[in-house]
Length: 89
Image (tube, rainbow, N blue to C red; front, side, top):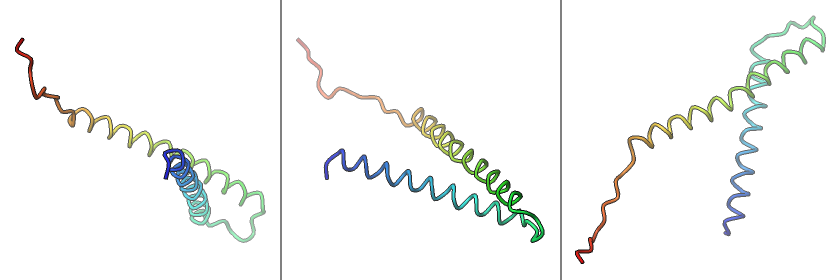
């Protein structure tokens, strides 16, 4: 596989993963809300919309948290490069 193919494949996987999380979260939140049977269509659409907003805000939060952990790990994980040979000329 070429580098371009790998990058496009990982981009597609990431995009579909985010879409799946948004759809699953929206359905989960709307299911938890337990809209009564007597309520109208607009109430259900409103709850789906609010659920989508909440789920979409969780994704950047997770990305920010992982970037923070990567930065903290980078501070402690840095290694000093020691030269193998030194010129004595």
